[in-house]
Amino acid sequence: MHAHLRIARPVSDLSRAEYMYCTALNLVVLSKFQDHQGFDGVMLGRSGMDYHFEFTQCREHPVAPTPTREDLLVFYVPDRDEWQSTCDRLAGSGFVCVTSLNPYWDVSGRTFEDPDGYRIVLQNSSWPSGRASAIK
Image (cartoon, rainbow, N blue to C red; front, side):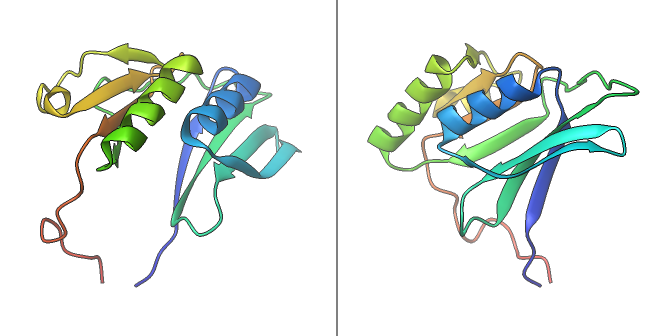
């Protein structure tokens, strides 16, 4: 099965989330919607990626983001220069570098948190291809 993954999250400030994630992760706006049954949203990604982000706000019943310190998006970035420049972009666009709850992520990576408490780990290594099997 070939699938496309959408990571959907409520945010407290839609414009801020769009700016931060586009700037930090070199994403572009794929689509936007306003007042779709009470929701506003933006979808961010890049052409050819097998995933994209959707951030939403509900006009009628605001949903407060409630991530835990273990709700992580982990990106494996093996090239050291690319990893460092991505870390710099995250910090420069408003993400805060934090100590990971799981010390494993601090060994060869860095954890960043956005103002809603969502965390991104940048791991300076490649994902070993034999570690997980594909969903079929």
